[in-house]
Image (cartoon, rainbow, N blue to C red; front, side, top):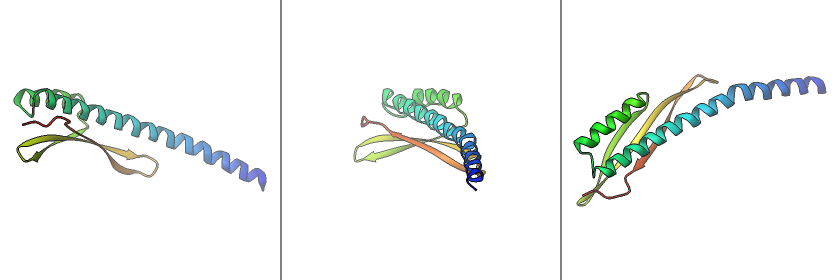
Length: 114
């Protein structure tokens, strides 16, 4: 009985490592990608003092570098000022159970734009 449990445990740990570790790496790489992209887009908005035409053109170039990430830009009004919230979304599939999930990262401009 002890040897069977030991073999089953070894197979379980091996399967767990083979299937789960690559999935965890995929989540990490996916989140890193959308986090860097949203940070870059927020910096572009801050440098151009809002969503001006040059800022939109520069943002399109960044979006084309990572086409699988969906980007949403939202203007947040605060009386006579506003800031911008940039959200990046990436669809990822959990191969172990065949479930699709969404990774999301959002950043808000630190400076208030008049």
